Image (cartoon, rainbow, N blue to C red; front, side, top):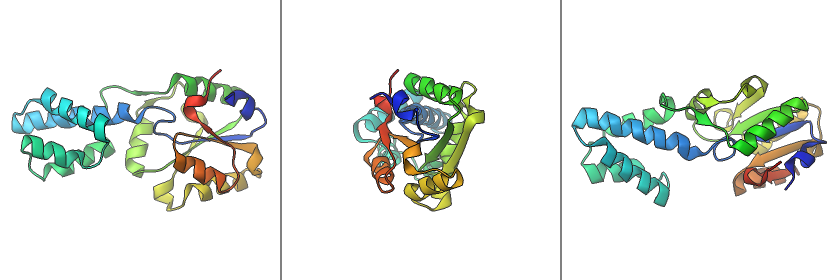
Length: 202
């Protein structure tokens, strides 16, 4: 789908963060790496073995109960859950998060065309902010306005409406870029055009 053509008559483009602007796994796997290193230091257990277990489990079954599974596999105390959770919120990543190439090029074009760019992201606000701070934005950061849905306690559709209202726009003057059915449904609730991030190309 030609998002560039679709965005031509839009004034605002709204993005989610995870798996839209960058791969969520690029963040999570670095968090798991840091946790494995911490456990190696605290418990003298092999970090590489722990990391490999976590990577395979995550790629096979997602994030659900990942700490519990890892704790069972390596006989870790439940108290390490605190460290695991804290790392998700404030980890200093070894490597910066990189934007998907197609999204970087699309966002750069939006800036050139003087479109407003918003990020409306769900999930733990501290964690999402930590990701944003450690992303290589290539100068785009000064053009971004960010809303944390969980912090505001509002459904995304309501935040989308507020963005339209604050800019005196109708729904056909904005575009939502997402990666899942939830984002699509929230957009459709208020008749906002929606596109899947992976479909964007030049």
